[in-house]
Length: 427
Image (cartoon, rainbow, N blue to C red; front, side):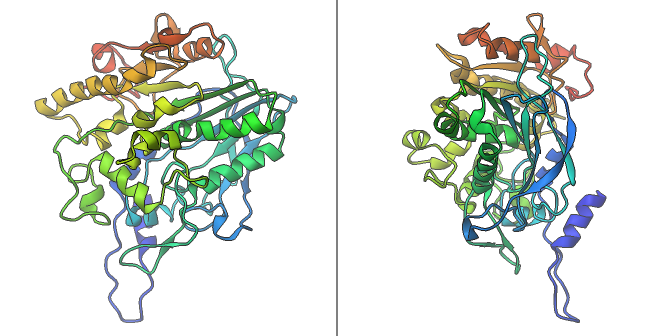
């Protein structure tokens, strides 16, 4: 709460002496996503210094929402390993300019408050399901509010203020890949891109982008894989069928679960606000645009774009994802009607997931019934193996096709049998 109050205070513009300042705009309540930290799944975490990217390309330079240099952490292999991991942070999205302004004052929108030292964890599995404890690892903090997907060369105004924002998410991503290539990723033999929550969506969106670079610039990289964690966010209405009006964007009504727009409308607004595109300096996939020419913003949503991905992926997700239930379904499942809605949400998740594992797929996954977002993947088991072991079996080709997707058929929390603290109670 203290951090929220501080963030609100920082939003207030300077006014002439004696003038009454209007109350600062509130932060998006969705920012509570930060309470669901999604960490790398395994490997060894060690501390490395924050690296700030140069801003020497004018409006094409990488930048955080506040215009500060984009920063990240790079852990170089100590053994000469040719394996690489890029891990992308999450933290929800900012659904309008006021939300993005709020973020620009905190770690989700500025590098000025990022820790000077940070960790990175390999997502390159060993055959037994443990993670390699030595790879070349890049940890990308989240500073743009649109899953590293927006781009505007000029600052963007915030209505009702004298403030501006910088939307350079895809430039941040591309500049980090440039850095990696300069640090030896051209010699990579194995590469994994992964991320959690909004970083999981980033993984879906950008896996092919970095894979295409590797195919051209790293000829010895024979294994390129993606591992999105809790990044499969449904195209789904909220429980009360609210639309965020009459307030609309840049009002508390718009972005508050319970009165707000549904998630699809939010993503549509981000698509326009941050100028997501299918161009060379855009983050979205042209093959998806062909599918959704009349609704191109759908290509910013994993269920609508995953089927055009060429990079094989293994996804970790809950069909009753706690963040999605709170912010897409927008319910705390206190009433019988809401509880029935949660059960239906699980069915709807499986319906939108079906194309991932249907037929001769190259993909895999671990789908739990635990109501979680920061899920206990090490402890969740199906068919006698935990999440990591299933991931490793897929990674090394021990399972293929539909057999690589492992789905808990239970109702929430293993029909009420799970006792993991990170599984929210139901009902």
